[in-house]
Length: 221
Length: 221
DNA sequence: ATTTCCCTTGCAGATATCTGTAAGGGATTT
DNA sequence: AAATCCCTTACAGATATCTGCAAGGGAAAT
Image (cartoon, protein in one colour):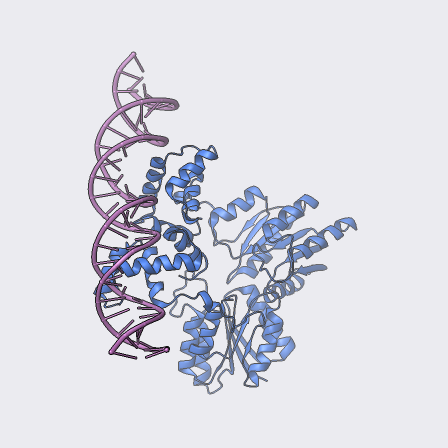
């Protein structure tokens, strides 16, 4: 089993619960837990310098901001920095994110080894994930279905840019002009009209206000 | 100190961390933890029936939905049900909500005894809160400033209804008609126009799309 | 009583949005 | 080569939005 594990999790209660479990259930000799990404990174670096690197990093994705100044502000940044420093380190993400396409991106882009979704079985699943990862397998919380990723209604890049611009208060004419300036094509006002109308049908919206409200609430934009 | 404490918290890791701490730091003889509001309520009821009621309820606000059917779906509903059953029970809310006006409402409407904000000192603060509440005092996490509640730009009821209607895709004419039907006044299309334009100024929005996007992102609607 | 202030309402004009129709171009199929 | 499909674009007409201006009414101040 792993000899050294680093835990990055900013909630004290959650942090405590996980550390306790790691010690009891898995008898990990060395467990370090940190409340800030920067401090976690420093620990990794020091361990590498001392030639006693951590075997596993368990990290959350979202870290609250407070008065402390931060360089690394999210789990994503921490993972990238860690991999840069120590490419072979195993990574388990432990977060409340449950959007399959976002989790899928973590495996594809960051090559994480496991994803555990916080919830009623989060701790049990985490123990399982650590064992799987130790044996060079990947793990995903059973509640998450990466296949049935809701790509059915996933927004493509172009439509996304239109929606973001509308949400920023630009008119369709302004969007058309911006697209022309940035060499984004297609870019006629008419096409933008058409795209938005098509989204009305796809998402069952009555008008632009309705569409934007839906998209933001569903965290598509 | 309290003899019996009930903890309602759906995240297994957080739940574990808190239970552990209650046992170690405060030597509470009986601690029950539940992952569902309904189960927590059943425990309260059983304890009351047995004439050995809980002295304190610690609850989260948001509970994830899953396959299990639920009657009580939020901490708010649990608190109301608990107070209905056992009016004198002490209540501490432990959640990640950090909006002062919403927390203020919990004290005013639900008469909760303490509010602890999850975060880097959440567990330490919770211990403190329990001691304070035991001595019949209230407690709020120091990071929360109930005085500087962002009421400066709080929406009044009327403007809120307009925004919600717009976000549902109604036109201003339709909103005007709805208001007339529901005897809400003022209700002319002109006034609704004016109110929305005024909000453009207040919130620095360029148009309706922009305003709705801002309001939803700031969780005003 | 008069003035002042603020809100509601109506109206009008300039823009913006939404929905069709239709023409043209590129890619694929037949 | 011709037909088909899909996307882009232009344009037009009906609505909707946004911004003024002006009139009226109620409440508070003078």
